[in-house]
Length: 263
Image (cartoon, rainbow, N blue to C red; front, side):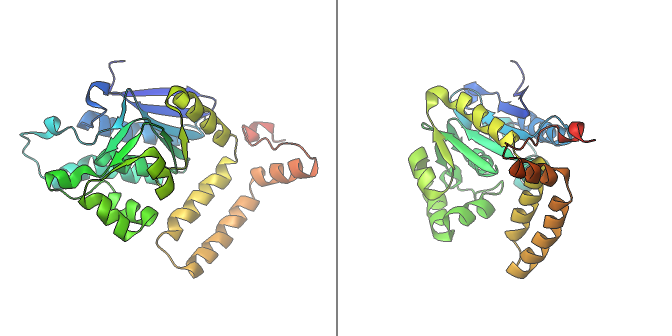
């Protein structure tokens, strides 16, 4: 429990828990670099089908631990390029689904991290705040790219300009999260959701992520071409054959450990 990052595995789900609860999981270099490495490790581990990122205690992540960078002879640009930017690029580039389970306050770069999941699950007491303008900085760690795509330019600017606090119900209405779970059962509900996702066809979801990420920055014509290419890859995979067989046999498809059942 002395580690700044806790790692646990259960039924194909790897949970990464930021573990600085006394500081609401405010990020220092050790946590940021460790989290990037842990995500890379999860990507290459065949037993991991879904990744959950959450926080210990009352906070998800309160952003940068300012005490950790006080007095350093380093620029903002250097710090971002060494810590946050590799983390966000790694998280968004994973082939496996990532759930950000926002259990409490997500502020500053922690708010950026909360947005970066493929699916965002919030506890009823979770809060989101783009707090950067309170100390006369701009939103970073991907917020200027992600937030306008979720809520539109104008609402994103307002949230950033006024450092407006958003609660869970507002977040759901704005599209900042997909589901809200009660505080008392949050971890169990997140685990159950993640395990359900882990039963889905992993290869097809990898291709789905690839298509969705590409579609954010390309034309409809390019997306149609990519869909056709990726659909062929999906159709050639054993998952597809299992899905079709299950449909014909009127049973639930079993996409887990499929390679061990091939003759």
